[in-house]
Amino acid sequence: RRREKEEEKGYANELERQRRELARLENDRLEKKRLDALQLAKDLEAQRLTKKKKNGKQDNSIGEAFFDKFGKAKINPYGRDKKALDDQMKERAARDLADKEREKEYERQNQLLARRVAENQRNNALDRKKAAKELAAYNQAQALAKKKNKVSGGDPGGYLQFGGEDPDAQKRSKLQREQQAQWIRDQQ
Image (tube, rainbow, N blue to C red):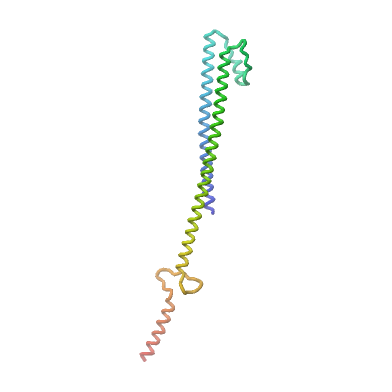
């Protein structure tokens, strides 16, 4: 019983370790995607600033940084660079898409983990049943061996008979003494 609990605890620890490892790998993968998206956004911003400088327009990166940090600016195409706004909308859509992909990936990982947990529980249950059957068969074999080893016709207490022992030694020595006594009487 204790061994079963230890095995279950071992399985639970292994499952928890695997879950943490999957979560770590997933976080690493998502962090890489986030960094890639961030790098893409920086590259797009650099391209936009380069185009503005070539066109001779004023750099408004402080205002855009404010809107990037505190929320989306209201789209007002009058007096603003339409292409920059379109780029900003594309970047926002790319971030939203990356977030959706991350959520889908989390859901997929959760489903995978749930399937693995269910599979491990099924396997553990099957292993426990198999071990119980083996234990029952072993106990039956031990009980049968004990029955066979008991002295037949002997004391109801059931002494065990070991190899090299004679269960009828007392009866035989008594019979030998009687025969010796009879032989001595016949000799006289």
